Length: 274
Image 1 (cartoon, helix red, strand yellow):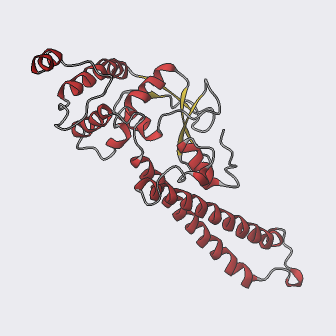
Image 2: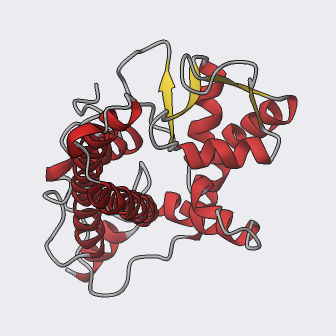
Image 3: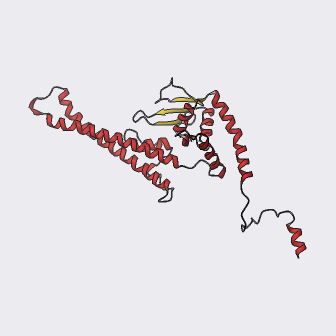
């Protein structure tokens, strides 16, 4: 469950919603200081806090402007209750703050995207790395290949097959996120960018007859998506087996595991030597 109020902390709410985390300010604590992921996570935290600070400034300036504009709207101009000089300065100030807020939002979106590109796949085995490289080589002409790298495409197709996967947009800032109507309050382990790529590729159908805000637009497999899902499930064991066969033998000087079975002929050879 997202603990942040989008009306009070829109930056922290956006990060929690898109990354599926409950405590944004500790996002960088699991990484080694100085590592790329540590720097990227720290950038996300800073950008989220900056957006929240700009949001507070805009809210305060808007309240001040409303307080000045209220008497004007009511026609109560007698007694110099409203200073036109103050109005002339407060309205442009509000516009400047809104522009700064928009730039802060753009920086946060860029920071989150940069962080997500660095995240490892669900499995860190060599086979997963090789599969990701194969996907990238296959779709070398796309600039959003990272969204379907590794097993991200397979996870998204399986989530859509299971049912309940919905695509949303924030009513306040317009950022995309996903929900699972079967498990409310639980962030699906699928990225919105992955879903958008699969919709563009014709593998997922997005029900645009429903609202993007509530309940969200339901995602389902297209016939092409069903074929792609079957092929992905069939290919995974073959890829793993091929990678195992292609693994180089252990180099000289490596000590074998003491629990491993002896190589055939070793015992007899040693006996004859004695």
